[in-house]
Length: 443
Image (tube, rainbow, N blue to C red; front, side, top):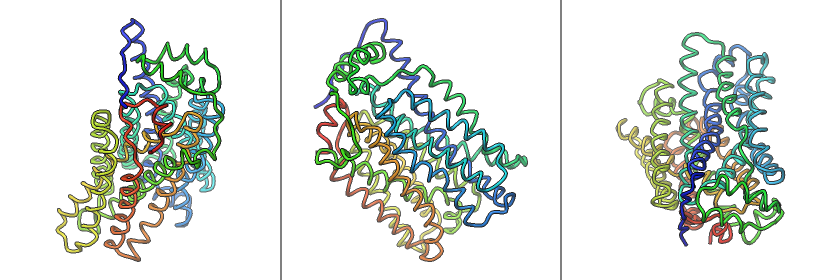
């Protein structure tokens, strides 16, 4: 069933469109910060290791601190957003991030830096399970995919921007604390931009605050059909166990496995892009490698963002994972492949992987009901960070002990699992209202 929205033609319509643009920007800004914080460590980790006299294990902990924090912050933030509301958590987690970002200027030991980065990771993890549900609950069905997938565009922009800023500042001998602390500026601007954002009308309706929900919906929701759909929300208490109930376990399994299998090979290959490319005789410049792979990935998410509400979710989710598997198999089996062939395969991988990555935040906001949309997104976030952490941690060991070919075949296997699960469980949600989608699950 396709949602046929009736556009509001009242003078208030312009204000509603402006609000949607503002919400898309401030929600996507959280993903920009996530990409920036994860990316900024790369250019300065060597300086941090030398200055703080860290061991290789300490270096690994600093690099993984934010990922560990995201693993904890995702479920926690989602639970609080479902319990206390989207609005208070939408600003509170940014306030925590601002505090952590400022603290980076003053750390003078490895354990202090680890704790600060861990705190920032918790705030970022909460952002996943607060910003995406809030965006899903305000966005019109006809534009929901584009509004939500724009967050992934922002993530890649933040990741690439961090490498550029980090390398430029380190080239002029800036202190590594200053480089890490550059995340403070976008965080403060984003915090100010979020002030005054209203509570989700779906969350209010779910909590029985009907009149307040209707007032907010009438003020901010543009399409009449979407406003009507909000009135269909039922007053229900969500629990973590609901994610694994007969009605919702398929949706939970899909969003978690899909996200895990999408980010695991990407984080491994993108994080070590310079060493991977150099092993295949394709240069040694860390900046060029990072910008090359992540720049192509950025193009991929932009393409998905533009197409998602036109051709649907499944066409952007399933084929791309099989493409990733095929090109990684080619790299893994063709040991004597010319460098240009290997480079082409890596760029195809980055592009195709990014196209389906654009859906990793869209699906959780659509397939789960309002009462568990936050905790469900947070759970999937935590599962994905396990994949990101494993990929980043095990990749160097695998390249050294198992060899490049075997490592690429393992990465291809992960893509196959993701593609197969998506083939069976991924629903088509384009143009459908949230109540219809969450009622159907992945059936």
